[in-house]
Image (cartoon, rainbow over all chains, first blue to last red; front, side):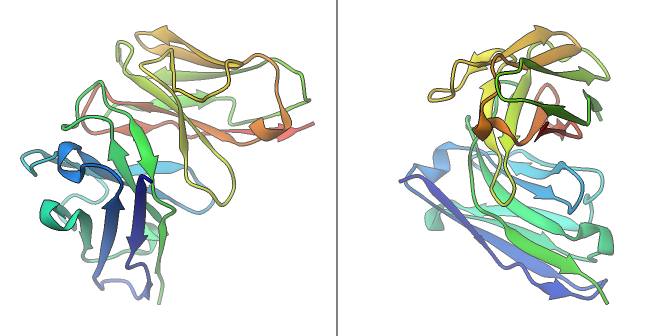
Length: 123
Length: 107
């Protein structure tokens, strides 16, 4: 069964750091690009960051650039999101999603999603 | 970044109704447009990719059309399980963006 399982969400005060993880199974992880997408309460979906199969291409949304770092460990079938200098507006349910291709290309779509991990930034 | 604008932001409809949701991009994105369905408490699910290609297993009452900057998602006969929020997403730019969503509610 193809599966993505996120972990690492927590309640943290503004300015702190958090590291999210996503464990993949049921598919050849190193054949696909991966993404983080968040769902802000009461609002919609926001793409956060994407990484190609070999980490050669990494892209961020402007709202997190310079604060968040995406990475992957293909040997461990895992995707990560290091979140620094967290703000209240980063409060969201964070999803890990599998890309349909090896790179973040125009033909891409997100065909497998995890169930999400909740990050709450509040004092 | 490419902005994606969906309309309406919400709608009320009855079972059996034909429903149309529109998505407009701030620039031409060819047909690099995907549609997702999200039900409360669950992750988004891909419905349509490349503007009009139905994902395997998705009911044929769902269809997508459009190219350039204007796109539509149509549900030909709304079913009880279709009440959800629908999002468009552009992949023309590798800085991906979603529309604001359209919540389809029961009338």
